[in-house]
Length: 176
Image (tube, rainbow, N blue to C red; front, side):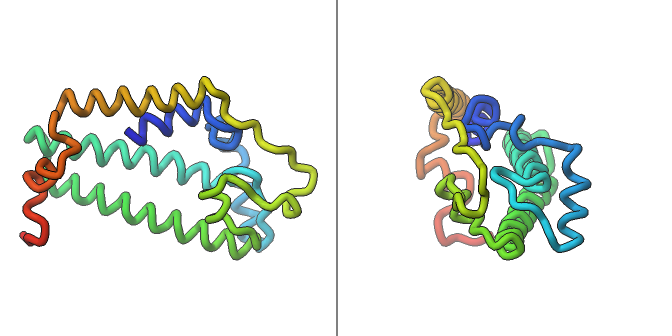
């Protein structure tokens, strides 16, 4: 559900959430040089390595989802799915660590910016306010969530029920 939403939001969402705003392969080498020199430039939206993280997180989340469905259908070994899931957790940890490191290096609270969607104007002189998502974007995001939920429920009617979770993951507190 969230993958569908993020993909749509990457096309029509707010200015700095759009893929065209932050996916700039030509800027990666320069950004790495700045990092290694200890003087990375602050970015209004995602920096070039943050853009790679966004794509990797979306992609790996999709692969983990696909492998989980394949395991449930009996078409894939559970060990591969588990390895992919641990890889996703490692990538999330690296991403969080990088956000904290970049916050320290650039002296900008990126966690607050990620949660609230705003950065301190004084740290970005001359920057214009980002274009907010329009009503069409918001409606499209809601439609993505609703249609994805309907598709999930068609495939697995009890997908969002507590009984479904217990049936697939054991009784709470029970260990393998």
